[in-house]
Length: 136
Image: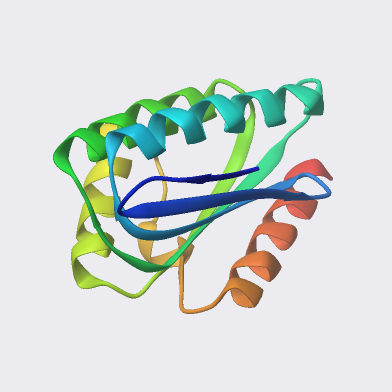
């Protein structure tokens, strides 16, 4: 799945039971609403099995306040669809601050620093390890 607005873009892919969203640009509400629909259609195929999520947002500067609120809603709903663990590839200090706030507002009980990575490969290794430990 790929969706693009005037200022941002997202690509959604799946590797096993890991969903990878690659974002770029300045995230807006329109992009996040379309992403949310595609994300939950995708994870419905997991039939309730545990899954992991990676947000590769290394090319994101920030999100609009409306998009940030939508991300809180998405994060909350992810918990109800058996998302075991999330990882974030973030380089912008603004985006990092926003994601910390989103996780707090979504009441996600995680150590954010453990879920923050500089590249996608490290995030994938982390998620795979966490899923393997969670499923054993």
